[in-house]
Length: 327
Image (cartoon, rainbow, N blue to C red; front, side, top):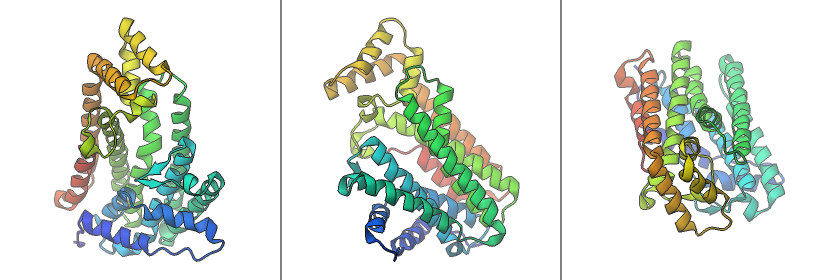
């Protein structure tokens, strides 16, 4: 049986590989922001998932580090452009590219990151190249679709739960799912296993995002790592707001609408008031129930992968950690 690596060991391999990336092309003004973005760190969750899936079947994980880096470069490209669209000042506690340089640099360096992501993804075995790149291209297009839905939801008060779940599936889940499936494909896994791992990633991603929605309202600020209520302050469509708008009636609906339309409200007062409305409507427990349901589905999909449970232990532990996290 192949040697099994721990998540920490695989994460170290990814970090070391990305730290050694050198884009020795000109002009430096195009590539310096790329190096800057990749130096910000992060969870490296997507390449980690790819390597964990690969390691289920093979132990030569160094062989697929370029493709793992490609997934991480792509993910950071989406964050760079997200920050520009959101006019965000900080990412992981550091100044965003469009603030440190300017909008044009953020656009062009982001575009370069997308090309680099494809180049690194394509550095895989020829036998799997078309299958891997088709999956990657399909996933990249889905993520654009999810981002567009997210932007369109900003001006709507009638977003349904089904629409919201589909949006976060596209915007968040599919890249996690593709990371797992890519690792399986590169390792030569049976198609049924690769498909089961993809579905594991989809359900895990949904649980992950819904947990994030819940934490933004009910998490511990000291542990969550950012101020509670940020989504409330910007009227961001989260599961809790979508369900509150769906369930509220009468005076409760009027109060919620007033807070959504309020100009320059006191931040603490708005967070407290909307949280109280969420409590009244019971949307917090609804969200927790969905997290549990998708978590259970993810673990069931992983269980269907035709390998001994011991081989899936590390990946199972990561799934459980992600969907029940406090940060």
